[in-house]
Length: 430
Image 1: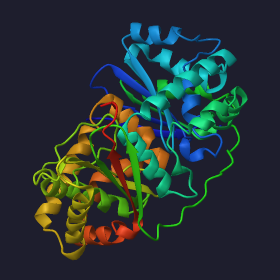
Image 2: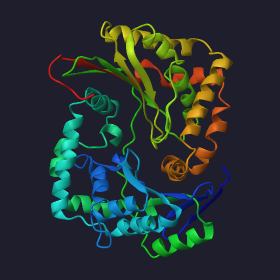
Image 3: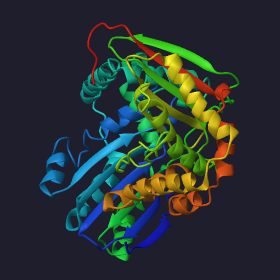
C-alpha cells in the first residue's frame, strides 16, 4: 500500500498524524484523547465513558440528532469508544465529504453542550447498560477478577464504572472532566486516505491552531506492586455454565517483553487481535485448545493481551465442559504452562506462532479505517514507530525468549484465578 506519512505538532500541542493513501476515495479521521478509566478516581468511576456519550448530544453549531443523519446521508459512518487509557471518536467518509467530520470534531472539542436534561437521560441509559451487563456471567466474573488484580491502580474498575458512582456523578462533574481532558494538548488527530497532504495540514490548522492548549491534568494514578501470591475468587449467579478466568499481570506495551509475550499468547491460546476492527484467526493449533477442547475438558478457550500504558493483565478465558470440574481444567492449564517453563519449544513452532500473529496484525491494518486507527492508537501507549516495528520485533523472538516470558510472567503466584459457578436458576444473556 503506497502512502506518505507526516507527523506535526501545532503550537497548542495538538499532535497531527497524516497518511496519504490514494487507493480509494475514502478518508478516515480519528481523534484520540488521553483519558480513560485509568484517569478516574473512586467516586467518579465511569465518568470518561459518560463524557464520551455526552459528546453525541450536540453543540450550538451541530445540534443533537442532526449529525447522525448528515453523516449517513453523505455515505459515511462514525462511532466512539472509551477504554482503560483513552477515548476515541472516528468518522470514515467519502473523500469529498470529509470536511463535515473535520468541522464536527474541532467544534465538539470545546463546544459540547452538557444540558442537565440530557445528562439525566444519559444517566438512565448508562445505568441500564450497566445493569444489563450484570446479567452476563462473563461480566460478573471479569469485574470481580479485575478488582482482585489491582489494589491501588485505577485499572481496578471496569470502564463503565461502579453503579453507586453513576448514581451520584453530577452535570458539573462531567463538564469538569470534559474541560480537563478534551483539549489540543491532550489529543491526537489521525487521518488516513485520499487527500493532499499540504491542503489537509492547512485545513486542520485553520480549525485547531487558535484553540487553547489546556493545562496538564492532575495525575492521580498509583503504581501497583506485583502480586506476591495467587488470589482465588468465586462468583455465583444464574445460568448453567461454569467459566474460568485466569488473570496474570502482563507487561506494558512499551516493555520489550510485550512482543515475546504476544508470541507466547499465540502458542498458548491463539493470537490476540490488538485492533477492534481486526479479523480473527482460528486458535485450533494452540496448546490450550488441544489440551482442553480436544480432550473435552472445555467448550472453548481464548486469551487476551491488551496493549496498555501500565502493566495490566493477560487473561485466559475458559468455558468449562459440563462434565468437568474447574479444578481439572486449571490443572490442565498449569500443565501446559509448565511445559513452556521447563523446556524449549521448537523453532518451527515459534515461527508458526509468529506467522499467525503477523497475519492477524495484517488483517487489522489493511483498510483505510484501520490505517487511521493505528496512526493514533499507537500514540496512546507508545509511539507510531511501535506499530511500524511490530512485525520486525516479533520476528526476532526465539524459543529462549518464550521460556523466559513463561517463567517471568506466568508464575501462579502472579495471578488471579476466578471461577463462575452457576446456580442453575434464571436466565442469563448469551
